[in-house]
Length: 155
Image (cartoon, rainbow, N blue to C red):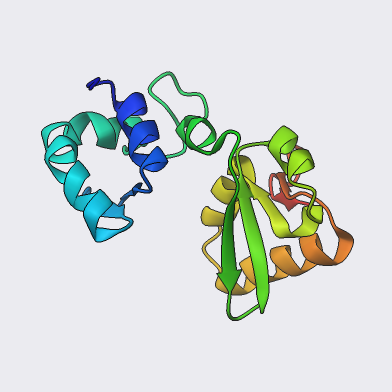
């Protein structure tokens, strides 16, 4: 088995184990008990590298070279994760990028790319997040960071 963090993350995901960095720097592994228990020794052994690969740092959305962290895209590429949102009574889809969004064949308003996930996660106001989703869903569009004069969220 490789000790390269991206490969470990990918292989764990193939086995049904999803890895998340908690705010206190812990790695949380979710999946079936059997799969998680099989991966725990390896995850513990390579924790520091996995934390780094998942983008932990002063800004988890930026890699060491200052560009956007693209680990989420690598993990999601070619896959779609369906999340049912009780409050919206709707299934939302997470995908790597626009190409995967087109391939999924669902309405664009219920699909979130990795870039959109980063954008929405950076918004501190839950009410504004709901508004962004409602607008995105109503007009069946993607959410993008406004690069214009306002520097806000554009849809």
